[in-house]
Length: 378
Ligand code: HEC
Ligand code: HEC
Ligand code: HEC
Ligand code: HEC
Ligand code: HEC
Image 1 (cartoon, helix red, strand yellow):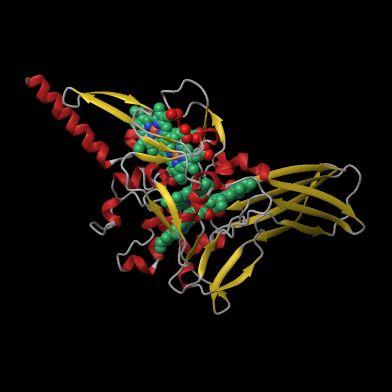
Image 2 (cartoon, helix red, strand yellow):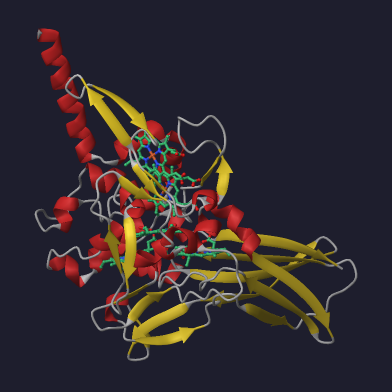
């Protein structure tokens, strides 16, 4: 009897720590996806894990008022904070799962608003949406038959939860748009807008950013693939995305033209802090000749000057590369036989000028990250 009591106490203790970190249950059966997620920006979206987000928050006027209104997108899993029952504090949720598995998998629909869209989550317990073309439309119910006061259970379907394969948002990528579409500041000005255009593209947010990779989606399955859950431009594992940026080089009478084709269905690097650049070098008889560097950014501000996002009310300049756009850049250097032209497209997470103002010294945030490099020989 004493052993039984101890056992029950143990069960109570573990369920309590699981209640605190809701991903802990998912981790047990989905270890591969969980590991990838740990490296994603979705698990590092809080000020305690993202130095860039923290630097902006530290200067933001809402901080003085103690109103962390970034939570709805950056840390929606901190339920006490979301309900106004606690202030922003460094806790296990902020550290490990600011956007938990459930914050995506419970998205039933997206409400559109000018200020920012809103995720509407299902309130059904242990009920998750997912996508699988072969099972589209189906709902897999999890049935549990318990016996011996619930200590032993027999399960059917996924051994833990229901799965609903009928939510269109998980097929067309809309599930991402509650947080990623756009955001206005207090002045009703869009500080950030992905400006999504689908065009003829067959790709979606999910097919590009969560491509299928090797490894089973759950322990209970021996083989197979799963959707990659590690989306993070701060680490270089986004290299797979470079195939959606295409270069071409054409010689003409006065030099040559480099073409960048953006196959992404959104503006490239629309975040106000980012700076994308095209760098071109000619390698000629053992010498390296750097040509001009072109920068691409959407600069926002007010009174004709660039400003912090919360003060901005106009676009100062915008030459960012839009969804499905092909951009041509002209160079006035004549190419010679034997020349090799090295074309490099990349970006800074934080524009070095802004990094100074924000006191960001993190080398990851301020280094030039190469997204694509290609060599053309003449
Ligand atoms: C006890 C094991 C177990 C736990 C715990 C568990 N899952 Fe699952 N889950 C499974 C299995 C097994 C499947 C595959 C079911 C199938 O293919 O019929 C699955 C399937 C899924 C799918 C759909 C996969 C598809 O086919 O598209 C999602 C989404 C999912 N789980 C999310 C979660 C989340 C989120 C959690 C944590 C809150 C979680 N799971 C916890 C075992 C588990
Ligand atoms: C409507 C949802 C939403 C709200 C509200 C929101 N953000 Fe974000 N934020 C995002 C998304 C989505 C990204 C990632 C976008 C990207 O990388 O292009 C992001 C990224 C950022 C980044 C860049 C982070 C990096 O690592 O480069 C900063 C800085 C940032 N947000 C600051 C804030 C601050 C400060 C607030 C609150 C005052 C806030 N955000 C509120 C959705 C939101
Ligand atoms: C609950 C809100 C939310 C949802 C839903 C969401 N995201 Fe995010 N996402 C964010 C935030 C916030 C960040 C930025 C975190 C940061 O940099 O601090 C982010 C970061 C990212 C990044 C990495 C950007 C970077 O700076 O490294 C990618 C890629 C991304 N999300 C893709 C997706 C895709 C694809 C979906 C849909 C399957 C999705 N997100 C759904 C909030 C969300
Ligand atoms: C055809 C492929 C493709 C599609 C479709 C696509 N993206 Fe991207 N996305 C890219 C590429 C390429 C980049 C730039 C590579 C990088 O960030 O390292 C990118 C970058 C991003 C970033 C990081 C931007 C930054 O500055 O932090 C976010 C966030 C993102 N995409 C979200 C989305 C969302 C949400 C959707 C759906 C509307 C989507 N993407 C659709 C290819 C795609
Ligand atoms: C940013 C939103 C987001 C987060 C966070 C997220 N998922 Fe997913 N997940 C998705 C989407 C979208 C799909 C559907 C991908 C597809 O198959 O097209 C998916 C697919 C899955 C699948 C099925 C795999 C497959 O290949 O279809 C499982 C299992 C799963 N997720 C579990 C988890 C677990 C466990 C976590 C937390 C560790 C998690 N997810 C966090 C958006 C998310």
